[in-house]
Length: 128
Image 1 (tube, rainbow, N blue to C red):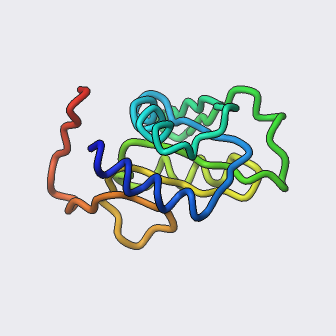
Image 2: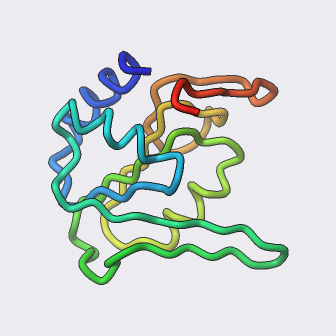
């Protein structure tokens, strides 16, 4: 995963610099730390909580009012699984967004990811 994060960081450097980083709780915490080594994560890090309840989805971002439509926002997660979190966070946040994840199970999604894994595979990260 360190190599994956390093490679992802290289690509993010080309797309940056970013004004804000948004970390998806809980999975995005370790990838955010790994990407900090690549010096692509700005000092301003916001936390996002996404909850899926029957018939209702809640997206809460800490200090979201600090993010404007003109800001470049880096959104960090560990995995893009079904794509529901990706879609909800992209719709909820302002700014020019770049979504990244270490692993994706979705090929045709507008996000950067380090490794593609087929949908029928289970992913266990070293920090779990």
